[in-house]
Image (cartoon, rainbow, N blue to C red; front, side, top):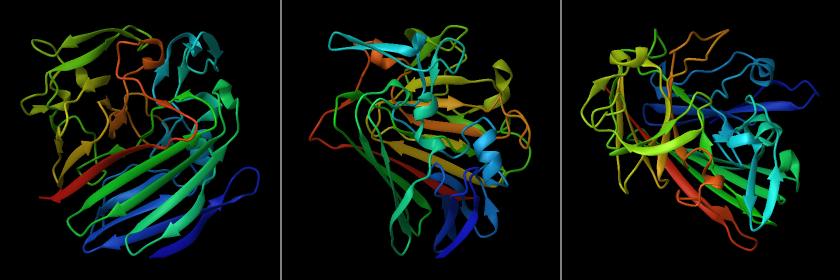
Length: 315
């Protein structure tokens, strides 16, 4: 285990980097945003990152960040719950994206515990932040096994009912961070996807049959649509998503009903478009406004838990 100061935030708080290993595999996290800073094997890293805390504070993209209380978009920056309308920040056109200023990925977390190959980070937020109801207590544990499986275990409690969707926004590049993900081979065992409008707000849940969203058989990311994807795929229990690059294979498993696949077309600055691909486990976009979607809410006195794992296999 290696624990160092990575840098300081704009208001002078130290940000730590904690690196852990298990066999030939390794990962590291930052206390800013509970960010997954690196994940790989030997001297190879398959996760995009920034060089400084300032970059994480000022650049877009949410690289490696833990996102909540609601990851993805909420239409018109508002939702109705139990007869009341809650108004959020419109930070993505007229919509709310990744919870706005309430985003857990833009906050400093505390180190709650470090094991042989695991680390637990914690965060507390106040009622009404960004328009979301309830004081929240959030924990995430990153744990790594000797076979290269990195598991992210989340828990969240709240003093009020609140829509919830927690995810990690890591960008993976299975060429060891080189080039783009256009030639990555992707397999997604999803029969349906969430079709969206020009604002990336849902219009319908559709079959993938005969569409550019059919990855039930292995397909190059860049074979269709120029590789541009930012859509949610509907997962069945025990689904295994698989991506293959030139150096490694990644398999994702999750307890959540969906995965948002984003190919980083909006990346700029220190990373070019399509430099990485995100597999954001969670809920459908705008689910607080769609009772027909698989929604989840925090409830006072109850703990919401989810888990997602990424297994890295060296070629």
